[in-house]
Every structure is written in structure tokens, then in C-alpha cells.
Length: 191
Image 1: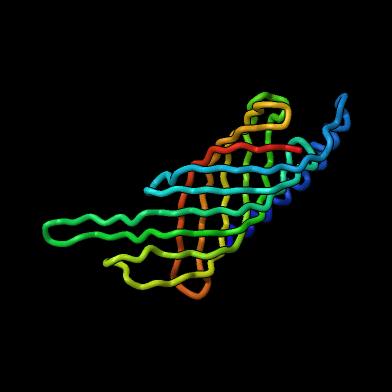
Image 2: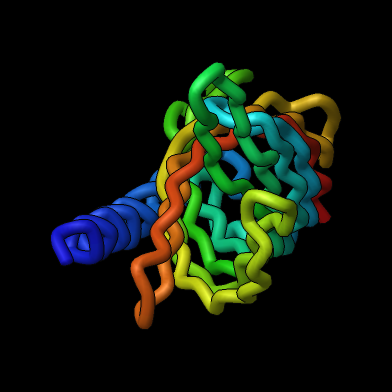
């Protein structure tokens, strides 16, 4: 519950600061027009063997604030270790979700500018099936994440970015709860 409150406070701060940033845009010589963006990214899991791929479509009303709808696929491999007197096994799986996210960039007049991101979404989790984990269960999950990264302009309408996020997912009707931290790199085309 504390996390949901924290996300709400962050969203409020970003919303209030967006109007201040818009006022600064008007004070400058040329105010940027609102822009649409299409983004694609791929990466790897930091603490697990696995990968992540994502696409997003968004709207940037000013230089600092971007609102995005994102679709993401994240997979983690099983960890199975054999010992003389037994084994240890940790189950992996694949999560797919759609989320709404807010990204706020700082120091946008610099060539490389940092940003923070937060979002919530829903999707499904499909655990890996093998001899250690024979049951198939598709779970409907809720996802909350936050993180940060940097954005680098490559051309007039083309940016590169690198970010990492802490993604927490869970199912309300069971004890399933997953935490992962992917590191992604990608490109954004603004139009």
C-alpha cells in the first residue's frame, strides 16, 4: 500500500512540475511542438539469465514529460544446480504485460539528459515447464515499476536511450510475486 501511495505522490509532483516546464518552454525563443514517439528496446535481466523486449507509443506535451503506453515481454531461465546430496531449483518463466508509464526528463537543454520513469500495468505470467516444475499455470498479474535512465539525441527526430527499472509483479489470488531488474537499450523516433 505504501508503494501505491509513493507512486501517487511521484505522479502528482511530475504533473505539477510539467506545467512549470511548459511555462519555461514558452519563455524560450522557440517552444517545441507536442510530439508523438514510437520506441523499441531490448536488453537483459541483471540478476537472472534472461531477456527483455519492449515497444511503446507515447505523447510528449513538452520537453520534460512523456506519457507512454508500452507492451513488454520478459523471460527468465530456470536455475537448477545439482549437488551430491540433492539439488536446488528456481523456476523461471515469461511475463507479458501492457502498461501506462510516465517519464520525466531532467536537464533537457543538455545533450545527454537523465530521466525517471514509473508505471503500472496488467498482463500474464507463464512459468517454465520441465521435470522439476511440471505444472502449467498461466497467471493474470498486476505490474508496478520505477527506474531511471539517460536519453541521447542522435538526430533531429531520433534518440537513443538506456535505462533500468525495478519491476514488481504479483497475482492477487495467490502467493505469486516476482521481482526483476532488466537493463535495456533502445531507440525512439519522434514525429
